[in-house]
Amino acid sequence: MIAIGDIHGQLDMLNRLLNVVAPQIDDQFVFLGDYIDRGKNSRGVIERLIQFRNDFPKTIFLRGNHEQLLLDALVEVSVMVAPRLRDLSAKFSECTVESDVEIFLSNGGNSTLRSYRVRDMADIPSDHIEFLESTRLWWRYENFLFVHAGITPEIPMEMQDPYILLWERLSPPGKDGEIHVVGHHPTAAGEPYFEPGRYRLDTGAVYGRTLTACDVFSKEIWQVR
Image (cartoon, rainbow, N blue to C red):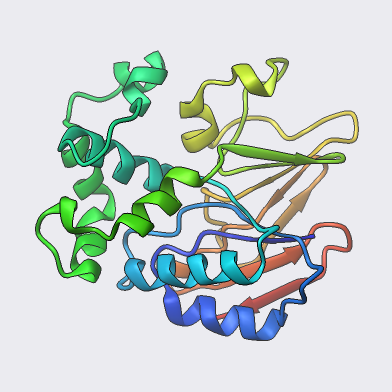
């Protein structure tokens, strides 16, 4: 079971990493979210992931906070209808006064729009929006819990605050044998960080470090710069 950390528009790195990993049809992949923003080719990344989903239908695509920012902005400009994070999380609603479009743009969304060569978010291809909508907030397999950011302990996953799942950096690792596999918070040295109960796989691809894939069972890693 292979998990892949935050990509942030780094299409060339993603292609090189997939070439190194050399996926097989029986492999189970889990992408940990943050496919877009900050890097220069978010559109290309989404196109590549859609192709990957077609080639490997078992793949799990988690939602990162940056995908949620774009989805919320699309709702605000009436491109789609769905609950926004501010509708689902009192915590998020309390900590922001900006509009959803402003939050998206100020967190790297401008680079995403440039990659689509559009000024109007309504011109983002509908199959890309469908892909973003289809992403999951979390996924569990055996003793592994995959989530973009973190969780609130002792609360069932179905009742978790989505703001915590997408944004939290300070939640504790898993316990009693549970291992949380997360992205979101870049490691300092461009290497994955393994601790009891948690694997951190955001290795700072968009900051000139590495993009990482990890077999969560064996801890074998593949990296590209």
